[in-house]
Structure formats: structure tokens, C-alpha cells
Image (cartoon, rainbow, N blue to C red):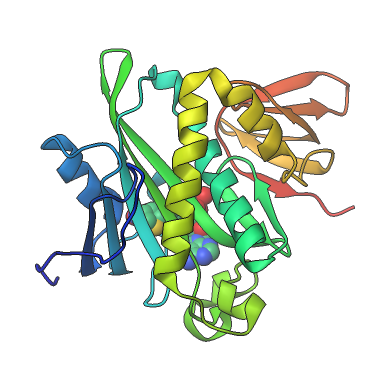
Length: 262
Ligand code: BT5
């Protein structure tokens, strides 16, 4: 691990990214951001790494984080109950989907609960982790990983080659990571603020415009039980509504959806 920290030369007018710390390699930027949050780092503090040695997904899954990707985490201090945590993930995945579409013309879609896809392949994963004080969130860290300047075929391990993509694979060129980071932070800050000020319902509507999985047949694991049905909606608490074949609706709070072959 390279201990040196240097602020990036990115001038930002907003709160998010006013302070950006960079390391060549870290275990996980989420862990680094948590350490900073624990010792009082302000909301909007960003940590960024070139490589993560122990990048994490949900449920302690591994997030492969080679050189060329954009791996960063943001310290957040939302005034939310613990149950409001999904709002952060929706705000972030909407920001990523919009920025990749508007800036690079990539046909992004979102997949419940935390993925951004292009051509059905994962280009970005998001991991929000919260630390609670009683019923409330004391602080949260939002981790974002975007596969950017590398070829998935050349770099990612075999099982991920068929399910992942990168900006380089789609655009056939490298992009400026600082410019992507800057755009993401700007957009995320606007959407996050909107979520915190009673605007979550409209953020969710915008998110649904990218949610091509809605209306499709899926199977989803709900606490050990595999359910099949149609992904019919996402409710205001961020839960997935699956309409089962017998017409009954099931509300899924956490899980992974798999598309069923027709
Ligand atoms: C996620 O989890 O998608 C959340 C990923 C969050 C990564 C960021 S990077 C910055 C910050 N620091 C961290 O340590 N993490 C965050 P989940 O939905 O559980 O998906 C994990 C699964 O995605 C793995 O089990 C693999 O199947 C797949 N995967 C791993 N690395 C990938 C990659 N680079 N591209 C596409 N898929 C990947």
C-alpha cells in the first residue's frame, strides 16, 4: 500500500468532492472512507484508488478492481432512519446511469437493486454501507465502481467476462477518469439532495425510466426461497414487487434478480 495521500487537482464548487484523497492501492475505498467518517470527515469527502486489493460487493462478495477503473467512495451524513438507506443507492445508480448516457451516449439501464448495465452487462456496481446510532444513520459510505479504461476480455477473470462490460469496450477508446468522477459527483450531489428533501418519489420515477427489468420475468432469492414471477414495480421504500404466477404480489427488500429465459 502506498501511504501517500494527495488531494486531486479537481476544483469543485459543490460539497461532494471538495476534498478528494487519492491512493494508488487500497484494500477497499469503502473501508478507507469509513475510517475517515469515524474520525469526523465531512459529508462529501471522497476517497479514490487506482487499484483495490480487496474491493467488496454486497454480502462480502468480491469486486474485481484493476487499474483503469474508477473506484471511489463518498462519506455521507444523511438525516435518515436506517430504513432509508436504499435511497442512497437509488440516487447513486440514477446518477451513474444518467452521466454515462449523457456524457458518453451509452445506453445505460439500472437493475434492482444496485447495478448499472450496458447491453445487459454490468458496467458499474454500487455499495452503500451505513453505521447506525440507535435508529438513525450516523454516517454512510457510498462506494461506486465503474469499469472504465480496461478491456473486460483481457483483464477480468473468466466468470465475469460474459457478464461485464467497460466504457473502453463500448466506446473503443479511453476516457478521462477525472472528468467522469467530476460529472458523477456533481450529478449525485444534486440527486442526493433531492432525496433528502422529500423528493425521493420523483427520483424513483426517473430511476424507473432506466429500469428495463420492469415487466420482465425474473427469479429472485428471498431469504433462502427462490421465487419466479414478473418484476412489476419498485415501491417508495425501494423494495422490489414481484407478481407471482398465482397473481399474488411479493415484496422483496434485498436480493439479486436473475432474468428468466423465455
Ligand atoms: C456490487 O455488489 O455490485 C457492489 C460493487 C461496489 C464496488 C465499489 S468500488 C468502490 C467501493 N469500494 C469497495 O470495496 N466497493 C465499492 P454485488 O451486487 O454484490 O455484485 C458483486 C458481483 O459482481 C460479484 O460477485 C461478481 O459476480 C461481479 N463483479 C465483481 N467485480 C466486477 C467487475 N469489476 N465488473 C462487473 N462485475 C463484477
